[in-house]
Amino acid sequence: MDYSFADRTKNFESSAVRDILNVIQQGNVISFAGGLPCEELFPLAAVQSAYEKVLASGNASMQYGLTEGFTPLREGISEWMKDKGIKTDPSRILLTTGSQQAIYLFSRIMISDGDVVLTENPTYLSALQVFRSFGANVVSVEGDEHGMNPDDLEEKIKRCKPKFIYVIPTFSNPDGKVWSTERRQRLLELCYQYDVLVLEDDPYGEIKFDESITYPSVASFDHKQTHVLYTSTFSKTVVPALRTGWITGPAEVIAMMSQAKQMVDLHSSSIDQQALYFVLRDFDLKGHIQQLRKEYYKRMMLMQDYLNKLTPGTFTWKEPKGGMFLWVKGQEDLNTTALLSEAVAKGVAFVPGVQFYAMNPKENTFRLNYSYPSPEKINLGMDRLVSVLLNGVPV
Ligand code: PMP
Image 1: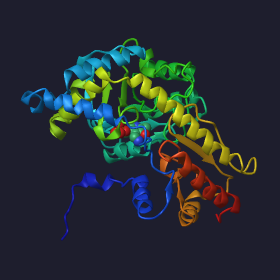
Image 2 (image 1 turned 90 degrees about the vertical axis):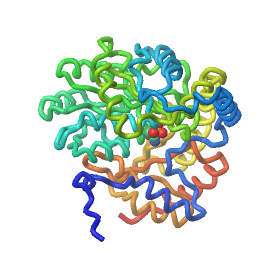
Image 3 (image 1 turned 90 degrees about the horizontal axis):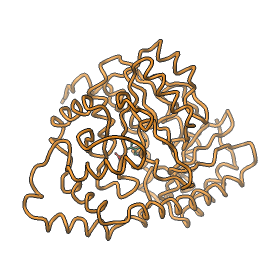
């Protein structure tokens, strides 16, 4: 049967990370590949008690809800945002099925075939998938450890007239990078000057290892509240299964996204949103986040200790200041896709870096996740990985 799918499906790509996860789930492979949070620290008791409160609150709690989402939760998020220096209000917050849906809905209302979206390089693979599925021409901007290069950014804004610029300025996926404050401000200045929107994706901002440092979001500088769409999620701070994220930004844009959302699912699960409301109200989420920070730091340092055993200069990385990933570069002639087959044969997996590049993929990079594997698994898996890396791999 020829199913003759719609033309738009020609731009659909399967996520290489999900494909890798499927393969490795079958064997006895220790995975540093997925971007999963630590299961042992999931606040199960708090989540259970929150759902009990929802169910006890009567039949109306099981009714259809607003497309924008459960109002008391939007009020709670609005307060949370104020703590981060982002001025918003519940009417400009749309609750979504994870921040993934926020990226999807924003793309749906902004991207016409052939429109340019500017991104970092490398960047979040599943955002690239979404942009391309709407026919975007994704163009990457040069950058360094401090963020996008402002000169290249300005040149590309002038030349490509992008629909928007997608950035993950705090502990990026995949490379864990943190933008300097100056680069964040410069990005916004350029966006004001040339009237371009920013989609700021911030799933990892809370997972900072040094609590005394503040990483101001780009949205917090948008005093006009006109140019930045800010999205975040409870997937990394509470649990991903709640599938609850949010986006905030200019009222007109949020209203258009809300219309798009009506067509997708009327609204995201209101049981989950109500449960989250009780989690925020009754559980010490800030204390829980502190625990996550400590544990992830410990795991990152443990993983890094193994990388330190490699011959200096053969592999390089920057110690992450937060988030869930270590991003490693090998020598120029290394091919990490070939390396992955060897690693899986030895019982350990990672994600080859090529997957994350919008343009000019670098074959010699790979991403390691340290939040999901227990310290015991990190010991075992890194022993295996180091032996593969030390043996060298054909190019
Ligand atoms: N953005 C980035 C950069 C991510 O890494 C992820 C999850 N891996 C998401 C968005 C989506 O997360 P969720 O839909 O669970 O909120």
